[in-house]
Amino acid sequence: MSDKATLEINGEKYEFPLVKGTENETAINLKSLRAVTGGVITLDPGYKNTGSCESAITFLDGEKGVLRYRGYPIEELAEKANFLEVSYLVIFGELPTKKELIKFEKTIKSYTMLNEEMKDILDGFPKNAHPMGILSSLTGALTAFNPKSVDINNEEDVYQAICKTMAKIPTIAAWAHSKNLGKPMNYPHDDFDFIENILQMMFTNRNERYTTNKVVAEALDNLLILHVDHEQNCSTSTVRIVGSSHAGLFASISAGVSALWGPLHGGANQAVIEMLEEIIADGGDVEKFINKAKDKNDPFRLMGFGHRVYKNFDPRALIIKKSADAVLKELDVNEPTLKVAKHLEEVALNDPYFVDRKLFPNVDFYSGIIYRALGIPVEMFTVMFAIGRLPGWIAQWREMRLRKEPIGRPRQLYIGETKRAFKTFEKR
Image (tube, rainbow, N blue to C red):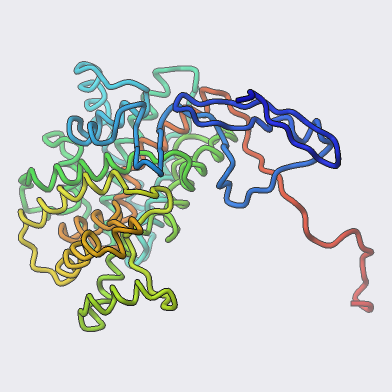
């Protein structure tokens, strides 16, 4: 294969270099296109065929159902590592030594408390404020309490900023949850690890002592690992493009939270529960909705089945299904939506219509089931997603800054009016 691509425009031929990734992906480097052609650009709405950057963080092959962080298969990481180990790997490029992990955990724990004035900001939100709105706003507000900009060339500065971000976002998330329920805010405790602190801040009352349920803690740890990074999705690209202006880490993460909030991105597991509730409200006839999903003339579609990236199967779903089964068995939850979910899962895994089309349950289907079983309200589902995606956003921000990538500035194809004369009020 040639190492160049030829593009012909109006009889003129232009050559552009081909670039190969380490997994043999091929890209045409069009960086000089506009300059050499006198203004021609590419048009690719949604950037479905456009690589915005080179990245060493995540490899995803949707056709083969492959997901790797820094070269490590997601299956191995979920089985053998915990969330903070995976976070360190994704952010810094290598699995931590025991000494590095202890330091990482200890430094994060030292930053988990929020400034008490953050409570004043939180009090200003109405009780029915969406937790994602609170998370985005308070993450942005962290900039005011940490005004010093991070020197990207100072490793210690960057390390401390990363640990602060990893520490404070879960506390904000737990406070948003408490605000939503009208409960007092819980504080993090040194007695608990990262996952235990999230659970105790969200689920204990002030007069209770938190006791760790290992099955629940392991399920949440797994869920967060599976959501750590997913290459250049909407929120990750947002973090990179905001950070490309040299905006700080908190501001860039806040922008990522807002992007994740959109129902086409982070709201998929919430849509699963809403679909299950719709089935129950209609009488609970699962077969009726299965048939509706099969009817190409019916607008109804099953949420949480298939994936726009994974054309074969979602590797994360195979992992989290085990956690979902373990949680349901452990908690013995008698909840109508979960019964419907299990029925749908059984049909989808065995019905030739779904099997032939590879419409298997995806990670959003199982994460919605787990969150519902734990008693987490649907408004908090995307917040939990954000906690998991946090190290990925940090890693992408750090990589972009260290690579000294230019400020993001997409082009456009103008389709508006051509030049016209201004009209006075009398002529309008």
